[in-house]
Image (tube, rainbow, N blue to C red):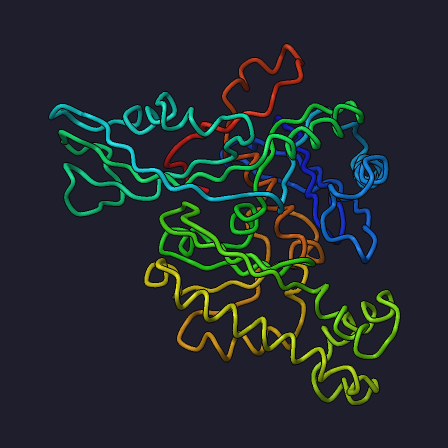
Length: 395
């Protein structure tokens, strides 16, 4: 039995999360991912964008989470994957590849990465993080799910690419250089949350992941195992706490504590706990968010592909009120609370929806390979490059 160590850092507005796992290769049983260390560092309640606070402060928070995870796992981290939830944009690109009446192979799809259309995404201000082939056409006819093995004259592929700013990437790279940790890759949490909570069937047949974060809510659309798009609502758990703070003229820290209490209580318990004077404020914002989520999902052009399966996850997913509201509004869809799949560890952690983006990063690391992984033995710090990952690999 051999093992491979994988480390991940999830940079979020509420906290920094570090996970360490070992990928065990067991004879006759394949690979198994086992969680062996976890560390967290809570960010200030007023923090909405982690990389906007002082560099020394965010570096210390990252270091604290790493040290805690290292102590639990009993190992020292050398390389790490990082997920981010800020500063990203979607670009859709159609690429026509001349096949000249032969059988389409995988290399014909990957050829996109050698084109000027892809290289153009690397410019003075931005770089691509991910590129997903989300639809195909043979000879400009009806869309197909998989062109491999089919004869074609022209293969048209629509790509969904997620980009971010070079300045943002440089800030992250500088942080980990100072911590003397090799940064393997930066990954979008819009993608990793879905990787963590969706079953193979949901990811293949189409699903919506609703990730309620501290400073926003991200609605991600997955179909045919690809992230085909996402939408963002600038409402998160901070808004629930801030509303209570503003209306009742109490400190934000106190209103955040009240919000967490209301999250886990039903209407009867709210009355017992004497929280009813805050609940109306809380409910008003929770209802607004739920209605916005339903409206956006209904109006997205991906609705017919993904709306049958709806999974709630993220920092705000523990709210029983939001769960109930969304369950009622999503009537007709299979709605459930997300929990992490395909990783072994404590159910307390795996069933916690607020950790899904971090666990999804571990899943990503085990199922995607970087251009240049074959050079890892040189131990050089690489620049941050977009990934050319293994296509059509089961996640």
